Length: 81
Image 1: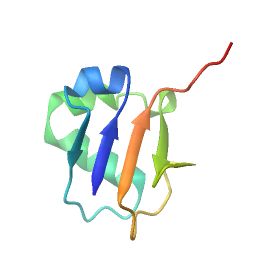
Image 2 (image 1 turned 120 degrees about the vertical axis):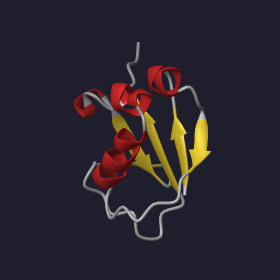
Image 3 (image 1 turned 90 degrees about the horizontal axis):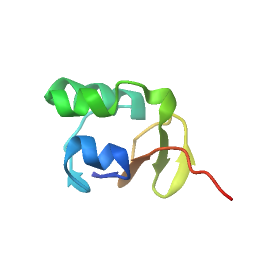
């Protein structure tokens, strides 16, 4: 699955995107797997309440299932003006 990182999430992880092999059932499970990898992921996902997620380009919750998903994107909330 393709995992994409935007804004400060990308800065903390050091990658704009990567291909991840995972058995995670939900977005939250995927985050747990990533956090277990390295400290940079732990720093990026330290406060998931400050993050939004999109699954196959649609906004989703962290309990969203990943079965059949091809892309997950993490980004901070957007502001408008």
